[in-house]
Amino acid sequence: MAFLTSFICDPALICLLCALVLLGALYFSTGSKNSACKLPPGPSPLPIIGNLHLLDIRRQDKSLMKLGEEYGPVFTLHFGFQKVVVLTGYEAVKEALVNFPEEFVDRPAIPIFEEIQHGNGVFFSTGELWRTTRRFTMSTMRNLGMGKQMMEEKIFEELHFLTEMIKSHRGEPFSLRSFNIAPTNIIFLMLFGERFDYKDPMFLSLLRLIDEVMNLLGSPYFQAETGLSLHLPPHTLLSSSLVFSHLAAPFKQPTMVDNHRPEWHFPSLLSSDATWSKYFQNKVKLVYLKEKNKKKSLFHDENLVASILDLVMAGTETTATTLQWTILLMMKYPEIQKKVQEEIGRVVEPGSRATYEDRRRMPFTNAVIHEVQRFITLLPHVPRCTAVDTHFRGYLIPKGTTVIPSLTSVLLDKTQWETPYEFNPNHFLDTNGKFVKKDAFLAFSSGRRNCIGESLAKMELFLFFVGLLQTFTFRAPPGVAESDLDLTVPETTFTLRPRPQSTWAVLRK
Image (cartoon, rainbow, N blue to C red; front, side):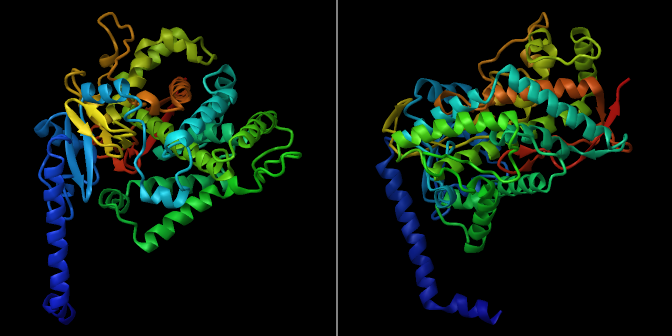
């Protein structure tokens, strides 16, 4: 109490506090006047914090939708000292991402990624570095089988291991988080050349590190750093740097050595006689070395490691979390699960596996998978940044302005969906029960920055979902009513995860 009294009574500290408040007020008042005819209107900011007091830090997407109802589909928010243009609703988001693909193509500089990845990688890089890295990454993923039959066979193999893991619980409930392992292994298979055993210590360590990164990116510390343009507290930054460095460790073994005898070693990850390992080494590594020689400023080991980390984090978390939600929703709506199983039974012969092409003959199942992705709004938004001064809907958005295209507001847009807040597969079916594509289905974003793993994710979700429902019926654990399964308050990380809970897999005869 004595310390608090001295703090309050210290004239120097009081003057400093007053100066900060006055500077903040001056900044916002002059900034508003200078940009009144440029940026879209929005709520008046408070000194220092801007409009952060209007946001639910754990569900920013819902706060942005609410503000959009008041200020329109295009408005300006102050995240601390940073001006941010927010786009809500299908029409505004689509217009920006599709009709202005080059203007809204960049990413804003986020301090934590600048300090850890130094602007490298495929996710938060910009300019020529991003364009070149994205082209190379997409080409490489296609060469490794993304969207092709060879990948379908690998998913079938992984489905077998996942099914055996579920059977090992012998009819006892187990954690929904267990479904993360199979999609994660598919990404590792592409990157390393072979899968992990589910009990492999390195695999479990990588899963833990990915989980820590996802929790970090959804933490209030990260949100505050991004909004206020501050650096994380030293202990938090150190912790996050250690997590990233440990996650990157397997990729930082002697990577590219001399061009005469290139070797890429991932100790204990690659088997010398694995077909995919050889394919990976001979195809991808040599292509990278060739490009590295042509464009030394863009193709370097730091960019390679950052790109692999981006693929690991984004490629594992999104599909794995969606699969969790899919099982949870089948538990919540058993009548929908039964209808999917009946359709599978009509299309797939007993003892056979559904192929990815079978989705065309399974409209209801396909609709359910799409509705899961729409309903859960997995990735609420990923910030963009204007690459040039941009005229948009009568406003001038200066180059370098952070822009948030709210995907949640698109997937829940009441002008596009009959019952946006209900889980309703009929959103993707016509009156004859045929599958209907919806333009407002932007679960993978749109434009130049759309998800590069979209085709792989779609294949994984369909084959895992159908394969699991062929073998099991998923129910709420004994003693838990379907009405007790909570879908409304997800666990907020980088994605919106379901809260930790258990499922009960009943083996079908």
